[in-house]
Amino acid sequence: MRPFGRECWSRVLVESIEQVRWACAWFILESPRIQERWIMILDRQNPLSVADIMKALQTVNESLPDLETPYDADDLITFGRDFENLLQVYRGAMHEISTKLEILDDEYQTRYSHNPIHHMERRMKSIRSIAGKLLTHRKSLTIENIENNVFDIAGIRVMCNYVDDVYAIASMLSRQSDIRILEVKDYIKHPKASGYRSLHVIYSVPVFLTTGARDIPVEVQFRTISMDYWASLEHRLRYKSTNDPERVARHAQTLQNAAQELFSIDLALQNVHRDLVSAPRETDFDDE
Image (tube, rainbow, N blue to C red; front, side):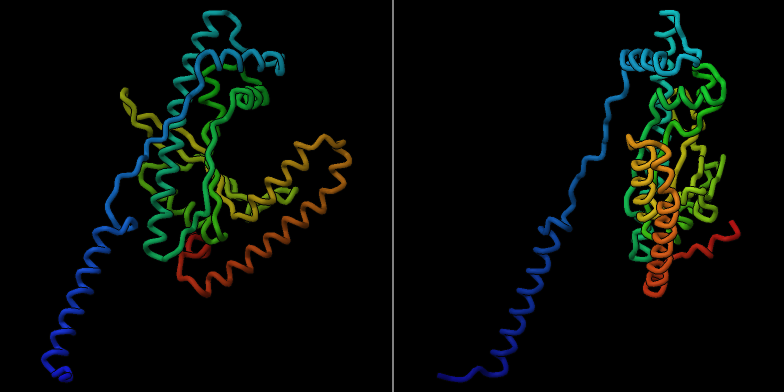
């Protein structure tokens, strides 16, 4: 048997390279991770019907007897329809803001290989909560009073990985040309007495409808994962508990200490992240 010559080895090498090329081409064209595909993105939700709103109004009348509400049958129907239309516009504003946040998070991943947003939650305020807020302002339940006095009907919670991420994302969203800032409450730099920390910003964003554009307020709460963890448990312990309020109050200092300890952990992990990842920091936005 004759040993392979130089030409034979060259031919084998060329054939092997061609096979690798074909394999790479097949992977690029056929791999399900890379292959082009359509993804369903239309997220339809069943809005409140006029009947649902009427039922909610009945509950409001029973639980908040001091609140002035529509009582005539025709007024109730008119209010129900107008309130349904109002919620649709606020849902649109909520989607506008959440889409902007998703785009910023995606850009961060592309530029810094880091997703600043861990997850997001959104909610529409219930008619019971809206009515309760109007009662504190001594206002009657009308569409006009809702629009002029309640600015957190649409709400978004943005849970970030680090404090740096909170201020970076909030600042970048605030700088967008079609957004106005209506109110800022920084409970991270200035925590509540309970220990609660979060950055609350009320934005006004245009929603483009068939009848034209409308500027609608949306409240966005930015916080770290640990801040959200503490806030969720503290709310359950303090407000959802069936225990006597005085008994719950005895644990106030423990809850406050836990909030401070979690914040210290936040800062410690942030320092590690700063050393390993070159992403924008809180100090980059101190002057804004």
